[in-house]
Length: 345
Ligand code: UT7
Image (cartoon, rainbow, N blue to C red; front, side, top):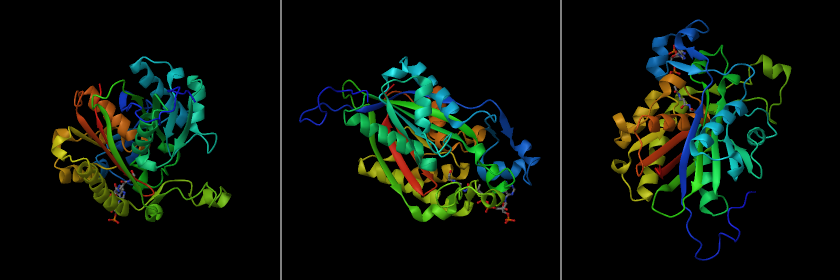
């Protein structure tokens, strides 16, 4: 590990190193799959997809492109924005449900390609909440004083595990990646990490999963024939849970920090369904300009949605230094998470 502090950070009086997000980089593969393309593949319509999900198009990786390739591009963009070398990183977290392989981790593959010497890292699997969890883990590594810079990458090639004969799921997902650099502030001016709240609820496992390919149901001719290596979802169950929990976790996080949603500049939620996002934002009183929605052009990129949406919000000038930003997500598991940051650049 690229030790940040020569002495133990746990000594009394050690200074608070408040974690900050200091750069974002994103990458989406160039090929676009539109709703009208999907109309030719399954029994669906542009109107149905738009009305029920808010999605118009999504990006799809070419067959020779895997998750580590998307992650690498996003990582390079974030490092370039900050003007630092890969060797200046202490850890790389890759949030994904579509690793190149079960092992080695995608983090190892990205580290090698970046040439990031003396770094450690791992893959983090929490489905659509992965990136929010990754930010929380990075914040704690940095706050502990043991890490100066942690690169959190959210990358998924969902097209590899989506069944393009199942109209209920194939219209929803896209491929993409984003990376945020979390690093220690030199002095505590209040900018950076505020708090996060995470929860898992395994009672949701039957409603959104990829049944085969793991130790429960290893790959066989039968699992392939039964199409068990694809995403399976009971949409309405997940929808109801997401609408309720995304609001609740956000509200609880604000409450325990003595904040109200009026003080939050922008809500950046996981992009699974336009209706889930607006229902959550409505309950928080944050619709319109104060909620970031870009699902229309990317679909649900799983771990990629939050960095992709944040990058666009920053590009559009909707986030400025000092603004309070709220990230929130619900995903398969179930996994639930929210994270509050005071924007630092
Ligand atoms: O990111 C991880 C978490 N995931 C989510 O948050 C996703 C949560 N769920 C959803 O976003 C929504 O449930 C969906 C978008 C997946 C589905 O929307 P819905 O309004 O819940 O539709 P539904 O599943 O209740 O289906 C309504 C009808 C059905 O037909 P019948 O039974 O009423 O005749 C479906 O067969 O729509 C039909 N349908 C479609 N029709 C045209 C389902 N998919 C399609 C389609 N095109 N692509």
